[in-house]
Image 1: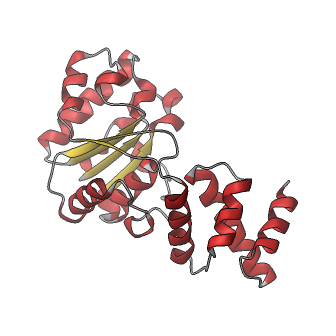
Image 2: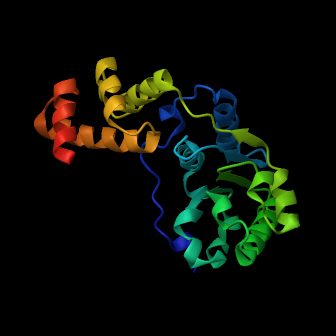
Length: 228
């Protein structure tokens, strides 16, 4: 199966402009430059779940458009490494959660071949994982060696104040005004990870538009109660 035929749509919010960079300024600058110029070896992004790795990978792909491809490996483990075939024809290849296939001989060989193809084509390979390349325990030594050559960046999770700033930035990106008190209320009622918070903000955007309401605490409370 060729991945190039798969409809992997990028999230509309996943751009550099909507990513709150606190603690990750150097990483955002590095990826922005790569996405704009195509120069550089790519990178290895690692960190906790919902820390922003997927957002950043998709942001890299958003800038060059059709010259890039994003593949979330967690969703395609059972499909097999054949899905990697042909990816090196794109200038930018972004692989999310690459560590989920560590230890699988077929997948590791497929990734090794892809790395070499991208390198030969002078493309850009950016991958994400939950840990450093060494800590992912790839069985294929040559693959581990290749991945260790990629510049590595730890994606730092946001603290409470930074989460509020990130939510407000995301809201502004959608044309919404999110008061601090409403953002604080959300943090007391929701899981404090950006994936959950962004999903709820999207829902609030839809509900506010239908009801022609502002994102006040009473309105947000109503929506949360209706959602159960």
